[in-house]
Amino acid sequence: VYGKLVTYDGLERFEWLHSYSKIINPKGKYDSRGVFMTFENYNVEVRDRVKCVTGLDGVPMSTQWESQGYYYPTQIAQFGLSHYSKNLTEPEPHRRIIEDGEKVKQDWIIPQGSFISRNYDLETNTHVLKYASPETSTSGILLNLDHVLSFVLKIDLNINNNGSITIAMQNREKKDSYYYIHYTTTNNVLQSMNNHIYYGIGSTNNQWRRLTRDLFVDLQKGINFSNEKGKIKKLSRSKLKLVKIILNGSGRIDNLTLSTSEHIEQFYDSARWFVANQNLTSGGWPNPVRRKVSSGMAALEPGWYSAMGQGHAISVLARAYYHSGDEKYLGAAVRGLKPFRVSSHKGGVVANFMDKFVWYEEYPTTPSSFILNGFIYSLIGLYDLKSIATGKDAEEAEELFDQGMLSLKNMLTLFDTGYGTTYDLRHFSLRTAPNIARWDYHSTHINQLLLLSTIDNDQLFSTTAERWIGYMNGKKAAHN
Image (cartoon, rainbow, N blue to C red; front, side):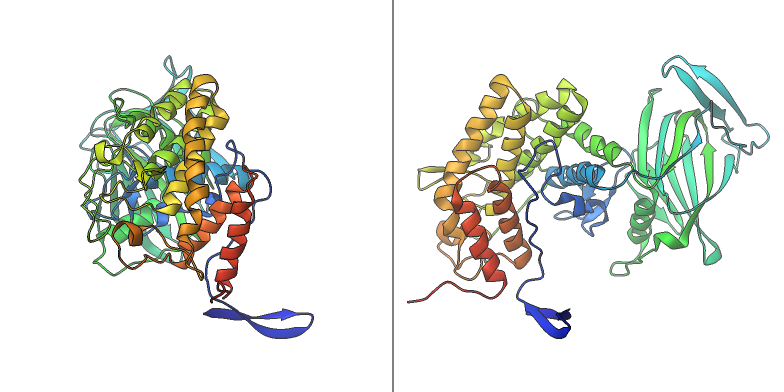
């Protein structure tokens, strides 16, 4: 129980609640081209279990089940969906072009032996900044700035090996306190030493690429990566200032920009990751870690597929296809349907309840776990694809969606405890005590049902959601 003092009609009262989670009523029918649930409120990259957003791919690396870090498809999709949703709900970002080699030029400080020039580039069909500084140079080519708050860096670059771009940040309250974020042409994910933080962006192989970085997040993750365990240092964005950009080595850059956000760029980092990292044979995005869901269930060995991860990925790719028109995103989304036709015992995500109802497993355990929120997220992914695709692709997604919805309508109330919900049906599979959903998962169940009630006329979803909302306010089912 928790609460707060509130004032209604001039009277002060203590308003108490059983739950700390929020229910958000949909404003209209769910649109697969629009905001994904309430993900505009998600900030995936700042979560404690995210090691960092990698410079190699621009997507989060998880430490949830493996401390060294690994790519977790579900988390990468949530990162993409949150940025897509923020792009639709937040105001236009404040954006400042720092250098574009043509219209906006800066007075870079060029040490002896180094040079810069602004040339027309045939690959990009625009003027770019070309630069080179010898490996013996200790200072690099320097641009002094006095920039606050807009800490999202976007830059097109083509850097030769052994090159780097360094961003210097200053603590505005401690003028002698500096942090240096180095983006290097290595494959090292994250290294940190004192106030120097290193993100590998890989070799560009003489190819242009776009790098989008939230400098504040990169700085925060880098500092905490180097700190002793348990000593989390929280920085304040308002107390920082970007004071220098330093170019080392040689290469070409263009469209160097600082802004308050670049949500659509980060969304496409996620979408491109799913295209590049799909198993083309199985259509799946493998989870590369061992996962033990519960005692009594066999551990999942690295390489398992998740229906929730597949569904989330399809939601990302369907939106990328809608937004860009690029067929590669649609192709990956359609291939992502394959595990929905393969039994969880054979490497897919399909379980059967009582040999009657199909269930798409978030964790394809043995015996089956029947997790509710992951199943519904997979249904939303299928709905997104059936709504955005056409022809046979849409028909296949619709068939899988309808099959899952039939199961949900018949099994939904099995998760009702009379005072809350269960996270899964392990009490059925393992014949053990139920795994009660904590309130944030309970509220997720409700928000998912409220979404489904906007796309399906069955009153089951809205009436069940209302009953479950009542549980959050202390109501219980009647007893005999």
